[in-house]
Image (cartoon, rainbow, N blue to C red):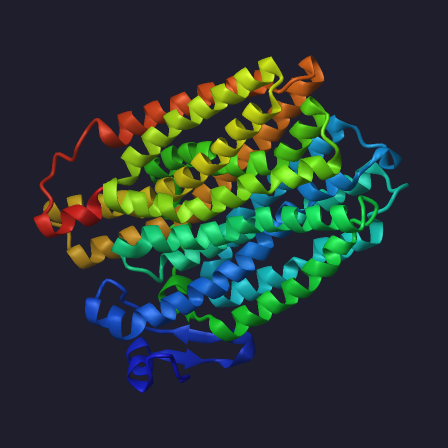
Length: 468
């Protein structure tokens, strides 16, 4: 056994078995819903795993959006037009979204801590490979392959969220998942900010300096995860949670809704700089000086969305948020028509902020939905312990699957912008499509999660935790 921040008593209660530096530390007993266990043992261990997970996920998001920054460096000498640049972003988004499915499986197969280390080290592949080919004269096909490799960074989110979801009690999941996701999302803004500093100081001809920053960070984050995190045995012994989640209708509904929030966030993160360059004629430096602001604010406010959901309910917060996203999209449309760069920038940054709030609120809905479903079955005579365990299993698998499908929204946004600019030299048609989609998301949220209340009476002490 190894020592923890709570001392020997905490170690014994958590029953942590050390299997060596490769197999890692395994927690045999984990019961965060037990208040005594949580205060004496669980909280310190959960928080330590949370912060280490955030570090790796943060770097993962940076690598995933690496090519959203690199395209700002691709001047005329690279012979890549605007449509080609949008396609690079779409390619990285697609691969990252698809990898989220096996990454979620990996937590159950080899353990959350173990997979965090492995997935962190995998980020060396796209960064080292880019260092060899990022130069004028390289074929566009090679750049597409490099963008595909950048998708490795997109998978980290689902495995991280699925893992962290199991560490925290129901009443604290909103804030914990919000911090985990928000800290990871900040990687989008940070790499854009570093790209801006490189362009401003060394010029647009030195994109490889970005790799000199991130390759060491990848190694450091993986080492931190190796020493700071644990695996939970009950999660790693559960290979069927993903398939249970796949059969749930709410997994499909929430995947659709998450397209509107996270899909918007990651899609706009890839596209913002290119839209400013293509539609408003901004230089790489001018575009880079603005693009990091939106992802930064959207990432920082994501935990607030989780907190708001904890307090007022995720469904209410999400529904209102989708309506506000439609309004922000309308601002971008009006600004495009009047060619107002200032108004357009305000509208676009509002979209980032609102997508961040929506990310937090929709993700908080996931465990609440399945917990309420479990409590309804308890009211019908099902054993409470078994029902709640099943709910935790399903929500753990669902968060990974929903994260994967939601990321595909980023692909749709980049393809929509690509087609819109190719057909009309403007992003307005794409924005009209986005506006309609946000309205549909608001309606779905209301009809599925707000209009009808449960027909089964839930005990008063469970009502707050069951509220969606």
